[in-house]
Image 1: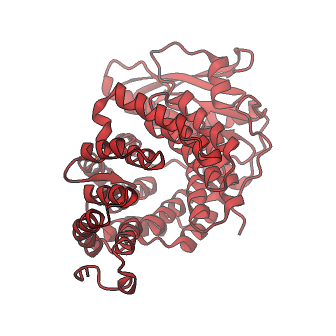
Image 2: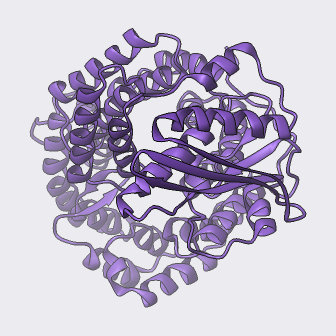
Image 3: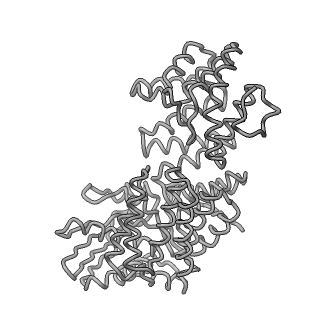
Length: 489
């Protein structure tokens, strides 16, 4: 299987001719609750266009940054998204009638090429969305296969209320950091949508993904939660076994629930055939490639994800980290700097960019200056950035190291989804500055909570890694495979 995309458009300024972004549609309805209705119209048109392999269609996440109510500069948006065309419009619903205005803009010249108004019964809204997608594909002279035509013509549901519930859940899932309460609200909304339409495949897919998210993020890391995800996805698979959305959801389930990379990869290949513009396919493929050491494929898939979702900082950062792992520092720096043009306040991007001179030529000065600037801007960050300790150790500065450790909360610091005990960092400092007794005492104190974590979450690789490093620091080489709760020697 070859799940890569060979890009000839590495610059966001070189927009392919058959490329488009569907911007959020304005809600003109008197009832503000119909905002979800307008969002559904835009989402379905975007989804329909994204099923056409001959087009490049920007993802929902990046397109939705250009909300209505704010001035839009077509040329600037086109350059930022790397597209030649923009589709925008508005929706007005009154009782059982709906009016949809759509217009196609050439972003390179700010020229309006096509416009159409659809005034129909509200029950015809899905047909309107299909007609708009077909019209836009025709304007862009895109080739559409028979299977793509059939996919575009298929409405996700006939129940408008169920679709509104689904859209609300989708908005929750799209949050940058949804918490447990958010996700359980999404589950409630999706359960209601499915109760109204038991044939609603996309709702089953999203429900399976939300349950998987709850499981993976440790909000409810139980077999029962994982089983809920499985049941939802089995229902979706039963209803539409060829659906790309179903196989994409199954790929996330295999990856986040079992770390079954081969199974996830197989599901992604099935998803890609039906969803050629689905950024999630390429992003997840890049994560799998990185974990399995397929570095060339990881780069191609990550770059494709960035091209389809160019304003998504997470995707840009992952692409940069893949280059970093291969010591391709110029490419790495390019992506971290791009992340900062999108989100200048992103601390991760600021720190990783400052790391490049240190990794490339052992120049610690840019990192120290950046960390100092971050702490000066917000002193509260000093106990949340493990790089402060790393920087102090690299410079062999005992005072700075002691200060960095003292700022860490008593309960420890989260690093890569694991709480690192403060004593771990204290042990590193003591060992570096030749205080073996203090180092041994600190590592001993650090071991207990990490061993407890490993017992509770035996599938968490980062926790095992930390426990192994602690045991190595304690000289417990012969105990490396021992039960994690065994007493330290």
